[in-house]
Length: 140
Image 1: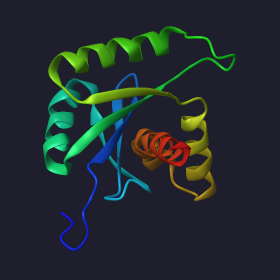
Image 2: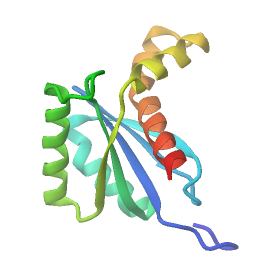
Image 3: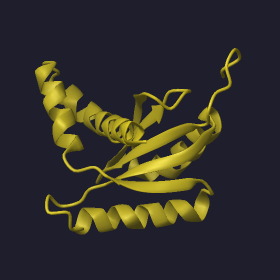
């Protein structure tokens, strides 16, 4: 994709939800995160494989929804199970990262932008994935 400068392989971020996966991708230099799409959970593996080949993904970052005190609850355990199933089908480095409050932060951002309830519901997972990825990129 980059012809003038040498690009790094991109990083894909996933916000694993009960019904949907929010997906974000890093820019070509792995400095910024862009929300990409929201996919139904049942279509997740196929969509992730497609994005890996389309964007030359070298790493997947998955948000781990820890409790506020840092312990793992049912959602965190479900996320870990999802990652283990992904590892069986996808041979790319994967990392779980703390995602506490990203959905709430995304919801607040959309409310401040006066986005309608219907559009917020459709966008929140993608925004959460973008926030997860940007925090990960900033921490490196």
